[in-house]
Image (cartoon, rainbow, N blue to C red; front, side, top):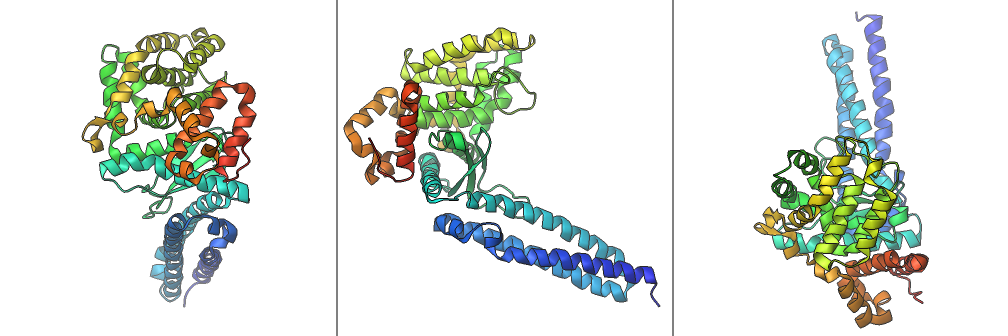
Length: 418
């Protein structure tokens, strides 16, 4: 006869599995974590692979729970299986948490399309994200991932790359999920920093960028050790700059320009010190667009507002030497070879001259008011229109609200252009 303790443990395991399995079965309804309207707002080539992946994850979870249930039933008759059944229940519980985390993240991303205006803006950004990756990846012979852009809190953007492993073992992210924050929703240059991470990953650009920085700073071991770990974020910054020019630099400074952190160097942070990151963007502008321009005023204002003397004493000489080396650092970043492009630099595909102030002004003149209303211009030059709006907002802060309104109308397909 089996002991009372054995019977109680079996009953407890059955109770636990019944609870978690019932909860897992609710995941079969995609509307548990995102509204039907939100799912319908996501274009088919994005939503379909997402839902297929989620379906597979949920069915695997339910199968794991049912297997645990069957093992408990066997353990009722065979006490030697009790330990195995208990371990199976724990695995099922842990997998449930992993699936819940995955569904919660993706559900929140889809569900961020909470109203028609935001939905329209995010749908436009989905397409711009893909358009920003296509030229390089097509030249490299790589597939171009779909993108799901979602709005969330904070000051900085982020990406969960297509192809990356999700929280659930064996589950792969089928699209690039890109977070954009409220203050940059209608000045979305950060979107192209995030797609830069995806492009860099697929083309092998980051190790090449790291090597280029190491060569540029070969005469200063301290600077070399400081700059090379930042290669991934620098590559993404280069990508954003090549697509949107000075607009990306000004927008970046608005994020990193907090006086409490702009001169800090948190060890292990993959992002460059905000002060140097801004100076590097200004150096890109000087190299590509000339010695005169708003980037000169931005850097002078930054140095006046945040002098090197405000940094920790140990960091001050590194900042000063980095600034002296900035021209060659910038040149190295722009000319870093991209393995998937047969060693050619990213500038071979993304010509920064297309987003110079002069080129954007020419675009503005040639298109006229139609630039902000025409489907043709949206489809052929959408990213340069983002660059133009960001440039004008940065150049003329007194008219920034008007430029934000214009960009908002354009992104949401409205045609209220003054």
